[in-house]
Length: 398
Image (cartoon, rainbow, N blue to C red; front, side, top):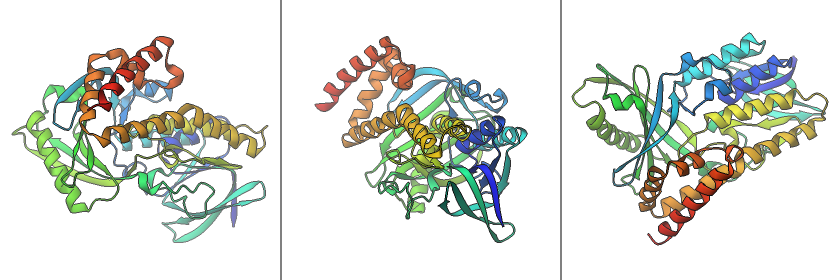
């Protein structure tokens, strides 16, 4: 049988969950397909939220574990550079994704877990999706006026898809994370700080490590562009976790849980919309390559997708064009610049320290760099361009 709905959402992370909640709230019949049996449990993510995230997306502050005003950036020599930007927030993906899903259900969205996307194709003015019902062992089909693809870094949109992007695999990152549970609290500074570490792996590639505090554990992980054998990645993470331990919880007994997954750190996907079909969140490549941030961009793309699905007065092609234009204007240009910045820094890793020194010495520069383009005042832009010019001149001769 061919089921019908107005909006079909594939994936129930921040992008898919926000899209489902806000579309259902607007009166759009909404169905969500989530491949995992439990929402949010397989997401390897430091789960840092930018200041004001809960207010922006109308989420309860109870999901926030720690308010973190302090950002600690560690360069390739292990030197720490302190930046205050906050307060940021931390949570877990189980709580974030699960809470958004509960709110979407409360608005009338239907969410099916254990539902794995297999294929999709246009059928007149609609899109037909086939998925595997993993619990029943059956293939099912759904016809929708609008489909929103939000499956994260594991999105399979490459083979014969209008959204195919040759550079997608080049942007995938191998990641591994420990949830470290100390028997006693770690040093107080740990619960006020988001840590990002930039240094070389044993094979010479750049690693990005992180430590983000939670209520009952510390998320300690790292990522590397491309593939890295599991044993090698675990060796790198063990060495990194030992460094973090020596500073924050020495001689405190711990237990830990290991999580591994793919993330994305490349260029945004060039094509993100066609009539009746939209791509958002990490599946669209909306991730900041310099720090791995993508939750805000994902949720914002979900909001745009909901608005698109609710625009009944527009033809599907026109609505898709508006979605693509909004995503491009708000995120894609900035995120492409971030990829170029990361490439520039990695070409000579000593440049990381130079940039971090500039951010620590100039709070207006740090604040302006962090904000979206549309949020920047003329004073922000002046501070940003002046500091960026000074850094570029210094870094070019490093």
